[in-house]
Each structure stands twice: as C-alpha cells, then as structure tokens.
Image 1: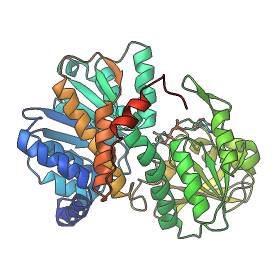
Image 2: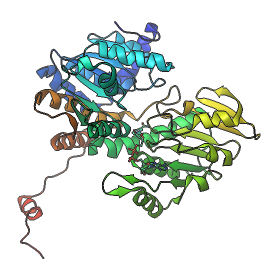
Image 3: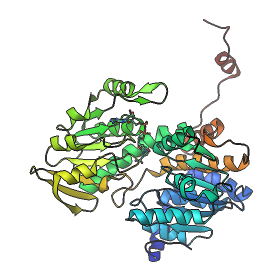
Image 4: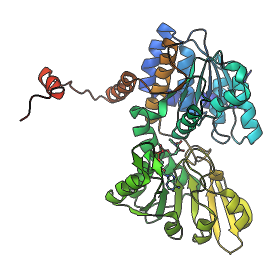
Length: 428
Ligand SMILES: NC(=O)c1ccc[n+]([C@@H]2O[C@H](COP(=O)([O-])OP(=O)(O)OC[C@H]3O[C@@H](n4cnc5c(N)ncnc54)[C@H](O)[C@@H]3O)[C@@H](O)[C@H]2O)c1
C-alpha cells in the first residue's frame, strides 16, 4: 500500500530508526504504556510530518498503541528515503513520501493519506487539515480531531477558526511550553546552523549573519550563531503579534540581548549569511536582493518557501545553476552572485544537508504529540471544533520525564511553601 523512493534502502533506514529509538527515552515510556493499554485500538491516524527518523519513532509509538498509520511528509524535500523504506515494511504502516517531490506529487501523497480515512490527523503547517476542509469534506464526520506541530500551522488554524471554517478540534501542540521553548528555540538553532555548515562547509566565525524574526526560532538561531563567533544582526518588524506583543518588543529584547537590530533595508548590504525565521512572506524582497554583496548566502528556517522572494531572485538573475547539493548559484545581471540554500525551503530539514532537530528535542515534541492524540481519544465528542491547548498536565509531564531521563529530579515545594505561594495575607 506504500509508495516510497527505494524499498532497498530499508536496512539503512532500520539503523537510523534504531539510533533515534535508543535516544528517545520519553517516547519509549509512552510507548510502553501504549503497548500495554492499546488506547488507539481500531483507529486510523493520518499524518503529514517531515518523514525522518525521529518522526518514525512517533509513528511506531502510535502503531504500538493499536493505530493504523497513514503518513506523508509536510514538505517535498524533507523525507529521509531510508527511513520511509524501513517504515513501509512495518505492520500497520502506510507510507507515501520521498525526497525531491514535485508539488503535484506532494499533494497527491497528502491525498493518499486521506484515502486511509483517518480518525485523527497530525499536521505540520496545516496542509493536511486544509485539504480535508477544501477537498475531502466527506471525511469531516468521522474525524475525532487533529494536532498541529508548528507556529505557521497554528496561525492558519486560528484564521480558519475566526472565519468559522474549522470543523473539528485541533490541539495546538506547537504552543505547549514543552514544545516551543525547546523545539523552536534550541532545535531550530542547532539544526539550522548545522545544515548551513553541511551545505556550504564555510566558517561561521567572523561572518555577519542576519537573522530575520526574533521569535522562538530566531532567538535560538541568533544566540547559537553568536556562540559560534558570528557577528549577528537581528531584523524585526513593526507589526503586531497576538494580543499583547509586537515586533517592537522582540526588537527591544534582541537589542538588550546585545544584538544589532535594524530593518531589512539597512541589513541587506551588510550580511554574509541571511536566515529568515518569521512565518511571513517576502521578508527578503527584490530591493533587498539588489543591495546584497556578491557571495551572500540565503537560507530560510521558516515553514514555507516564501520568506525569500524567489521570483524576484529569478527576475534579477541571468541564470541559476546547482553548484552542489542544497546550493543554487544565482548569477545576477548586475554581475553579483547570490547563493540560495535548499530552494528556500526549511534549510534545517531539506535533505541531505538538513538532518532535522536533534533527537532529544524531538523526543519532547513528539511525546506531546503522542499524549495529545490520546487526549483527543479520551475526550472524543467532548471537545468543540476549534483550536485548543495542550492540557497543562501533559505539558508538565513531558518536561518532567525529559528531565528525569537525564537523571535530574526536582524536589516539590514544602507544604509551607505551597501554602505561601497561594496566600495573600502573609507579607514580610
Ligand atoms: N525550521 C524549523 O524546524 C522550524 C521549527 C519551528 C517553527 N518553524 C517555523 O518558523 C517560523 C517562525 O516560528 P516561531 O515559533 O519563531 O514564530 P514566532 O511567532 O515566535 O516569531 C516570528 C517572528 O517573526 C517576526 N516577523 C514577522 N514578520 C516579519 C518581517 N516582515 N520582518 C522581520 N520579522 C518579522 C515577528 O515579529 C516574530 O517576532 C514559523 O513559520 C514556524 O512554523 C520552523
């Protein structure tokens, strides 16, 4: 039932999966409970997640809980073909993914996942949930709920909810503390810089790196780039963020963190490497590209490949050629050359240079996913359509298990401290 690039890669994929499995202790614990209790028995779960080794362990955990799994990637470039081949051999696993897909192939794989008629969906970027609401409405009556992995997906879902378009409950896994504080910040930081190094083999120290967006991802990238010796400039926007925050707050935070802060118009001519992580579009636009120095490297860590305006890049260029894997050289009519990494798609996940977040990080994020799926099943019929939060107990449990898996145990507050924390009468 699966469709992968090359079934013969399965043995290599098994080794990759084994390495992830032994390094994901939190999911291992959940898997043990799932194996015993079978909370997902009889259910079908459809997923659109970057299909690589850590995701494989989440999918195995869901299957261990009794689910039938139909999976694809959420990006045409991010499938590890070895892992896809290995998973396709496992029972109750239907895989539709390979690296280097065309747009049509990508959407047809999402459709194959939906052909499995899922009870629960796990999405990363909201493409799967969007497809259900736009093209596969017949599935709506069966779906218990969904989980969303990333910031951009949650933003799309909230926009759907505002328009009254979202027809089932979706847990915003991204917005759990035990997800975004670690995944978006430390995970994106390490994997983005790692992927840029692998793709270019260039030194980070001494370079001027422009980080666009000082959100959870940008904070991490800026801090780790500085740690490697880069001279970091942060670009923010005057836009609003949710109800209480704006780009002004983020820019001020970056300034007090010791970074230079400016607009993209000012930064464009200064950077050696640009990394976008905003979730918005055309952050690097035509006028910025025109100002850049020859040899500038452009990379995107935001969800979609629209943060760097590729159309503008093409219009300025005489031609484009792949200089090496993950690196395209754009020779501009002005005589300069700019290098775009991974076609402007998630640089830290686009293969082969992108390996995705470190394993321990995804252990936490996917533990939240697995427990959120169980929460949807346990509360079947009780949750209203719309975006809903990860329960606090789940969020705390994952952080505690992650700490304990690293040998760290905290002591609880004493009775006296617990009372003091909740009292309003006691002052000095
Ligand atoms: N690469 C990965 O593995 C990975 C992991 C997690 C999230 N993401 C994606 O990264 C993106 C950012 O996620 P986040 O959690 O940091 O979001 P966030 O909302 O915390 O931060 C985004 C920041 O970008 C800023 N911004 C928006 N428009 C801008 C513009 N025109 N110029 C400069 N700054 C601008 C915002 O003010 C905000 O501070 C999203 O698309 C998210 O889905 C990627």
